[in-house]
Amino acid sequence: MTRVAAVDCGTNSIRLLVADADPRTGGLVELDRRMTIVRLGQGVDRTGRLAPEALERTFAACREYAAVVKEHGAERRLRFVATSASRDAENRDEFVRGVLDILGVEPEVITGDQEAEFSFTGATKELTGRDDLAKPYLVVDIGGGSTEFVVGADRVDAARSVDIGCVRMTERHLVHDGAVTDPPTAEQIAAMRADIEAALDLAGETVPLREARTLVGLAGSVTTIAAIALDLDAYDSARIHHSRVSVDRVREITAWLLRSTHAERAAVPSMHPGRVDVIAAGALVLLSIMERTGAREVVVSEHDILDGIAWSVA
Image (tube, rainbow, N blue to C red; front, side, top):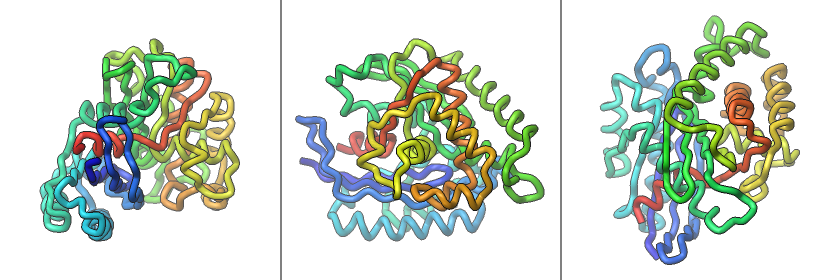
């Protein structure tokens, strides 16, 4: 067993995994997994810079994670990966310095292709040998700033990252006079849908979206939709992991989210407070993907880029 620690810092959340990895079995024994909504990408699409308050929220989470990593004795095998928001920001050097000071490692601002490969590894490593899930897989990681598309069977055959994350779509299309429209207008939804469809056209130039036999969905938008579909009294990772949600159910949930108020979404018992304002956009991204690919269902995975990062350390 090799003890490893992995941090995935995205546009909306920062997450930590400390685990013991067994290369012989392909298994990760999870010791600590946690997530904090920090909204690092706040305003990046508009300003091109990381906001001071967003950086401080992120650094506060890093200080918490540093204590956990030290407690488990994983400081020597720690990898910190930063994705969409920090790729786009003019002042990302400020972010890099802060993380280095707190955690002792320099964050790797990875490309969309690297992000896609980590996501694919994390999501599919434990699916090997499953007779009920046909290959090739289309792994879709809907993040805050971008969405990664990866097609492959036992390895990545094609991948593409496009800028249609739930935070980016919300800030670009659903904000008026500095506040999220609640609920959004038909015109706002139509503009967001057109933006998503254009991004799917780009993804389709590289990734054969319709050739996959199994759609695997990752990250908070997808897992939250699964939690709603399962009518959970509270967020339950064990029940969500490898659950299946039909396209008709995703369509119903998306329609409700797009017509609901902030208070109605916040009242959903499985809804993380940090996702209330961005979940409708994330749901529309998922629905658009399912309709474009012809997928009848999505297999939901709680294992994703974070697990892929951990395996890269091991």
